[in-house]
Amino acid sequence: MTLYINGRFLTQRVTGVQRFAIEIIKELDKQTEIKFTILVPKEYEGSHSFENIKIKKIGNFSGHLWEQLNLPLYIKERPLINFCNTAPVLKKNQIVVIHDAAVYASPKGFSTLFRIWYKIMFYFISKLSRKILTISQFSARELTKYLKINEKKLDFISEGKEHFDNIIENENVIKKFGLRKHKFILAVSSLHPNKNFKALVEATQYLNDGDFDIVIAGGTDTKVFNIANIENHNIRKLGYVTDEELKGLYLNAGCFVFPSIYEGFGLPPLEAMSTGCPVIVSEVGPMHEVCGNAAIYFNPYDSKELSEKIKIIMNNDEERKDLQSKGLRQAQKYSWSKAAAQLIDQAKMLRI
Image 1 (tube, one colour):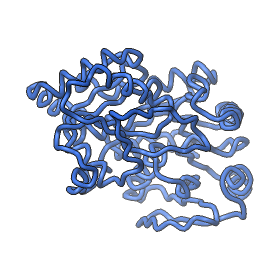
Image 2: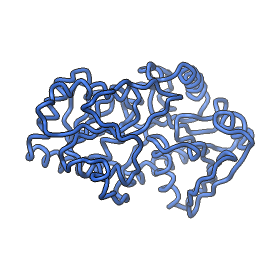
Image 3: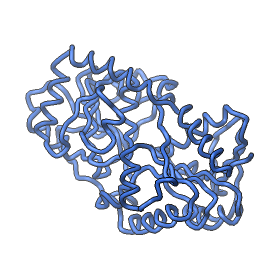
């Protein structure tokens, strides 16, 4: 059996969905029962190397045109796996992973063209594709709500954290950014409005007496997102950081805050827990699924409550240690090898 993988994501900068795809492919590369070939646009110039999985350039277009024209024309009726929300809209013999329903449930954070295209794409994908996978029970409910997907067509696939276990932290990151160990609050993600960094800004008015900094690490895509205005002298934006720097930040932060108002899964809290960083997350969407009893939860629309939860961790060593140990145990429940096994099982059941 040979399965093809939509490799357009390999031409994109690595964020959550690209990370998801890459890590599962690494696990798929360890098995020999099923052969995989990744199809990529001609402009692909990456250095990814796999032992058993081939990478093949096809077509003359790039971006969405490549995905909607070159990819289906090349693959015809052969089976295709799509990991990153997008897929050829008219293809039937495919599995598509849709990570969330944000363009429906929380559309203000996206450009008009982005919303229109994704709604069109999701409609056809949900109706024609043989299987839709998603990453949390919350997202499954959301996709059922907005797309009316047949329950037999929709299933679950896990996320993992081994990628962070294998990263060697940058020990100089604290010095580089002028931070103090365990004396800063860390938030990580793009500046998409759904990430709700406004809550952190508003929380600073209740944290003036705290001897700690608030730090946001991560970039943003101005072509897709309407940028959240978080200008505030009490918050430091580090911009894009490497994986090694990010792990160093997690290991040295006093706590990690995830104030998002909409998520399909929420990989950063899992990464944080895997390093022993205490986690504070919003009580919305899939966060209880992801974090269990290993996090402190807060109402993302109540900045004063967030400030109180921050103080609990930053001023209480016993609370920090308790969350650290719980977080490490919770993170062990997730693995990319489990996700890869789930994908293979789905492919076998479909006999694609």
